[in-house]
Image (cartoon, rainbow, N blue to C red; front, side, top):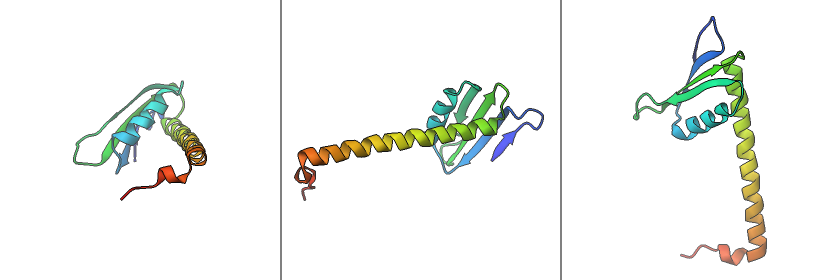
Length: 105
């Protein structure tokens, strides 16, 4: 849900439900690396509610567009990390053999 200004789309607060610091901090991180962002921060109104408020202020671009771009960047980062991890696991399994990966009961 977006709580923004109708007069100025470059400033908005977004409410994310069923999320916590894990996603909020990573989205904040990617937003802060975008040169269009002048301010970005998040808050969790109450620890017992799984809700996050993310505030975005941009130079001129609509905050919704910048948040969307940031989430796309975050997905690319996650895909890259997953690819590197899978390659390392594959290399480890071929070099060490599957016997070293056996779980002992």
